[in-house]
Length: 287
Ligand code: PMP
Image (tube, rainbow, N blue to C red; front, side, top):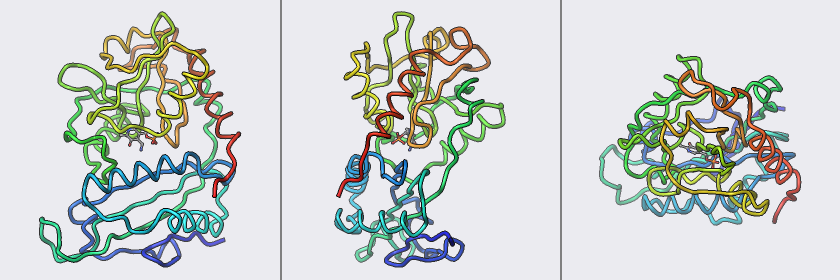
């Protein structure tokens, strides 16, 4: 089955799917994106992702490319045509194609691109061992709440993590507090078994996995604090983990070379991952 991409109204072979060289996403990173998990062919938390897409677009004053029902139809069609069962749907909207000039063009049509990617389940080894993170200064702009395709600090951070033999980099603000990973939200569990994650301000992307897990944590009655935590607090924590549309919930067992807790994935982290997977399994496709 050839892999297809959706580009401005057309389904094209993935390898031949292109945008114009004067697309403002290409020249200015003037665009936004979403990554929606696909689990057993179902788009997980689709409306929450589309709400966040609308918000990102409106913060940047980029018009919506399509109505929500039309966009949903195309998402389902691309998943169907690509035979996607488990993986992600990637959506990108830019301000469109116009002669290069920083200010908004008088006339342009937002450009919409959708792709899908099949993904393997997380390996048993990763779940058993947990993953390593390193910390580094947060070098990003003041609107990390917008899911912009301008990801250079995130790219550099993930590369630094990879070169240090780690899976993720936790970015740290000027006060020494962890903001988030380069593509994941950051969480710890305190000695008192309280789950802590940074409150959703402009300093972080309010992850959809984060929001759903917060609901599950509240529903299960676990103690929860939405607040900043320092690198020192994270290193002294009982457990740590990350969340994202591709990670779900993954245990962190080392920060800057120091073991977290007993150095093994946390018990509560494992329970929260299971709650999240159970939640995905319970979903049925919405209209
Ligand atoms: N923070 C950043 C910087 C991200 O890029 C992502 C992933 N898009 C997340 C957090 C997690 O968000 P989500 O749960 O919506 O995937």
